[in-house]
Amino acid sequence: MQNPSVDEGPDMTTGGTEDMSGGGLLDQAVASLRRDGVTIVQDALTDDQCRQTREGIDWALRTQVGLSPLHRQRTYEYFREFPIFVDLIEHPLAIAVADRCLGSAYHLICAEITRNERGNHYLEGVKKVHQDDCFFPQQPELQADLQTRMYGFTAQWVILDIPAPMGPTQFIPGPHVGGTRYTSDEPDSSFTFGNHFPKGSLVLYDHRTWHRGTDNHCDTPRDLIQNGYALHAVDKVQIRTPTDGGELYIPCDRLIDQGSETVRRLLSRTAVKV
Image 1 (cartoon, helix red, strand yellow):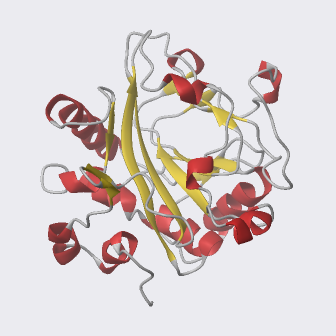
Image 2 (tube, one colour):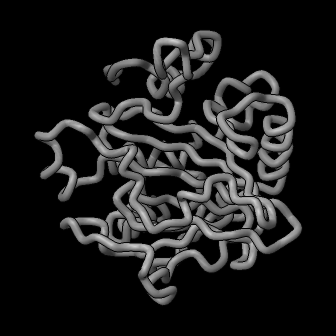
């Protein structure tokens, strides 16, 4: 595996994942994420990890039940068939960024896979310019604080080369604090981040950052995996299970029993002391 890297501008970071305790790559990624609300680390995954993930996504979309045909949640439940999903959830780079940006008391709130086909987007609504406000704290007393600090971010793993025609997520970098708002009338020139995501990259974005999904105009499906991390003031929004009594978070006890301390902490119902 070549050393991962981060770009100096708002677009790319490059460097290695060998030591996530501090130093160049992590410092660059965190600084870029805090400044621009989005950053990308190239060469974060090997070709084999990308292959395993693509195979896992294809298997899950063919064999597992989801809320929509091209969308599956709670990917960690597939840990026996495809352990790569858990590997990405507890990937050292994602965890190191979470430690830096969120402190020690955070958890997993989203673990999903999506596919966009030519003329068939997994969720039309996300093509509107939006923040991931479903991942915001809902407590009224925290709304002012939300304007000044990060409550969570998403780690978006790029497992195949995603050029502009394939429909990468597009971002408006920078204005993610202070209450600035955008609409779907924004010109394309506002979306200066997201024209091409190289295979093996990790895109990190603050949930306050304005962004939109785009259409896939290629024959190759655009497969993507996203894991969300947040402070405990945010609920486990997208890893809850629909039941007759509403949506509930049901821990995956088998994985918690067998998994690492990191997995146990991320999947816990409440903050775990570290």
